[in-house]
Length: 279
Length: 279
Image 1 (cartoon, one colour):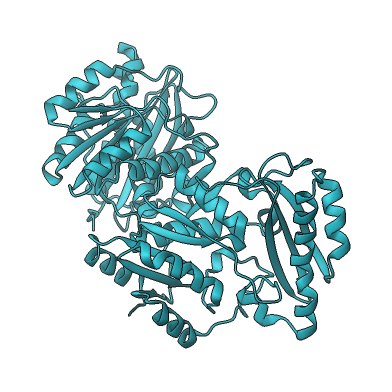
Image 2 (tube, one colour):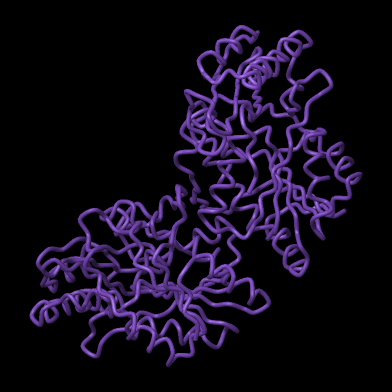
């Protein structure tokens, strides 16, 4: 397994492997089983598997947790080795001098995390486009944990005709149902226990929808009663493809929640109503 | 020579030629010797040469000349054939349904044409990124006629690590000195005669600088006296790399002018002071 630490060296690596099919799992490190599942999903599909580890300042707001985002490069490397990763791209500096380019996506980023974290998706889209360029990857895997991000990246790739196949990876939960996140490391035992209410609130909506409830206000009422958090950020049911809020679940839909436990912001989501086929 | 008329067909073409070195000359058609010089520059550098012809609505303002932009597909095809172009990409529709992605460059687009044509460079950067993706080109040629555009594209390519070498092509003039432009077709005989004053104004600055004048206000005074136009849009001397206005020509600089003759907006530019090496 190679460790590549500069953008120039990444380009040189990509050039050496230009006849291979290259897969990329972009991460901010502090890897957990969710990340590992994305690597395992991509591993058999490609000749060379790259994992990027970079805590991207562009996608953090001024009052967010950039400075304290958890890091553990040695443990990360060990996890990558066990999956058979070929290359870890872990640059200190990601952007060139005089960097000034931004990639932005429109309607899909207006609501949910896009509304609560101004500039977040611009930061994500910009770094992802640059990572695609540096690694020259043919495929890249993004988890459904960040469902809006996944939809935004797919839209961006189609709009810019980027030559990369986006592979969605299922959300991975701990045994108690908590969606895996590097930010779970911030939770106290008590916060973690209450954090389980995000998943329970989503399950209540999915169960009710499966039982025939199609009115979104009624679904949200059920969910709100189950949320036990310090500050809800959003709780919505949206069209699973356009991410526009729904009044009635008459098509594939996604229920999404974001909430604070102490200073830690957790997100989770679940399919509601008819299945969405990834075509 | 192939004619490719949809984005999907362009991707299929690129896939068939993925082991070739592909060059792209992006144009809006109504080709003149300036375009042809770009094709001739790229032809010996690549295995397959693509010319795209698309009048891109994204880069026109609401009150600009999108609707009347000149077109002549048959003459364009003949010119391409004579240079040995392999593929003309001329789509009716460039963008997919629900298209909503924008690529933007910062400081380099704040002044000059960027200030006078809001949204113009976003439109250019977005379509160019998409053209790079659709054609999977290894090299692309942009003329120095659109000097700010050339600098913006180079910046974007470096910032996003797009795997494309940008080849700058020298500005081409008619025998009388008028910079070639598809928009010259709009000029009356009298407007065309007065349009020569753009080049003369730039030459006056370059000559004075070569004779030792380094003060930009003095250079601009000389140029203004020679401009014979209906409405000047801008006349500036900027750092040839950062595009920031200069007070003193103490480094490679570029003089740029834009002006209206009747309803037609012409632009021109010229190096001033020390040579800039394209590295």
